Length: 93
Image (cartoon, rainbow, N blue to C red; front, side):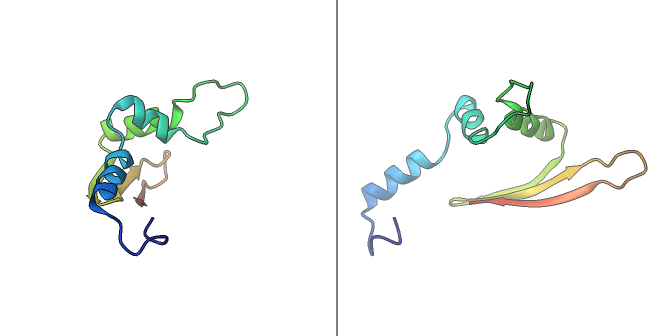
C-alpha cells in the first residue's frame, strides 16, 4: 500500500490494522500453518501451531516485543544429551 500511494487515508489504515492481526486461537493456528506440508503419512496440519504453543508453555520463548507490524523475540531450543542449548533470535514482519 505504501509503495502504491503517497498518502493512505486514515480509515484505510485502520482497516489494514484491523485485518492484519489474528483475533482468535483458531485464526492464529490457521495463519501459522499456511503453506505447511506435513511429512508423508502425517496428517496433522496443526503441527506448527502445536510446536509453537509447546515452546511458549515450556518457557522457551522470551523477550517478545511487538512494534507495529514487527514482532521479535528469542527462542531457546534444548540441546540433545551432551549438546548445548541453542538460542534463536527471531523476527517477523
